[in-house]
Image 1 (cartoon, rainbow, N blue to C red):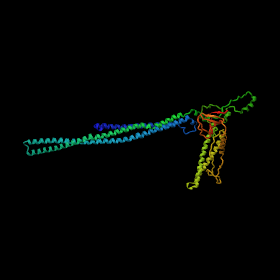
Image 2: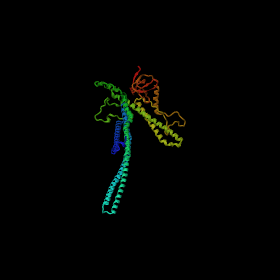
Image 3: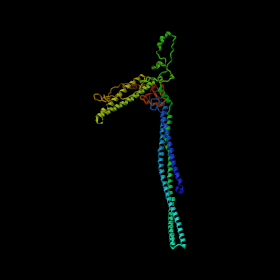
Image 4: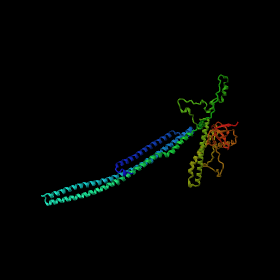
Length: 539
């Protein structure tokens, strides 16, 4: 069934229906645009929310950054940021695949519909023009026929009039004959116009208008199909990102399962263990024995309380709960920060010094590698002047040499402080290098002969001493064994990794710095956190 056959006389209905269909497309496009605005605003709010609660993401030195609960919260914020990105992707795809595409298609439909309606109006105008010609010829035929009848009647009347002359009678007959001839011509013209109009009308109702109506029907059906596809895209656009959104939600779930309260407790212990011993009993001072006052004073050299145990904190009362004044000022609770970390408790000071040594070592190794590269580049320039001027590298070589000397000085300084703090120190190994006057790496002796020896460096003596001690102790007999309660990665040099439940031989007890030296069955040795294992010593 088609509109041209069934709705041949419903031009106004078809025109209104097609216009209403186009308006529906416009309404749907507007609806999707508002949906994209909602998605964009939602994504923006999610990103701002993640950013608001992730202000400390760049400060990895914060103590809480090592806690699994804190890290999981950061993971959740990152997942929410990714989730916001998927909402933005939904908004972008809705705009591109539906709004822009449908808007462009809608303009094409409007132009096409306008052309079809204009075609229908031209056919209507042609039919109306033919009808006007028919009506005109009909009225002319009617008028001329009446004139012919009157002329005939007048000729007959003149012929019967006895007073009329023969000339008058002849004239009246000629006039009647002429009028009858004109009336016949008008009759023939009217008949021809009627035949033409009927033909035009038949073509109009059976050919032209049905063709236009069928074209409009096809246009409307294409509009409906396109609109239906837009409805499907509205759902598919979100379905396509659902797997990624699901992964974001799975990441949030994983962040929750990654929280380990036991490990967090161990991190708190590791970060805040002071290394102090608990204060002993305060001795009784008998002021009633005045005669023994002098001897009593002389016996105060032994530790009696917290003030003797705190070293630099003498003169301050040792309380577990700090008493802050009502008027809070940072100076009341924050000690002066010093370069050697002497303001920290012994255990924390040793850890910070070890961390600083690792940082200096990495910087020194980096500068040494750069010096080697500059030296090689200089040699290449000297052998091949066309590749570059060796003098252009002088400033960089000098600067690198100065950086190395500065870092060596800092390395020695922090090694000394670590030794004063009672730290064992980690065996930091880096290849020593000598430098010529230009700061470049020198692999030859001053006389030009190749030399296998290099100038000793003060810091190397420290490393060598640690290495010698380590080698001397490799054959030490175990003094017990330990069982790992938690996993330990052993990422730092001098440490050894272990898995929960693993049994290791104890080679050296904890000397108060929180580390125990252990050995595996295969001979691997290293240090592990004492708090991560249960130790059983041989009797």
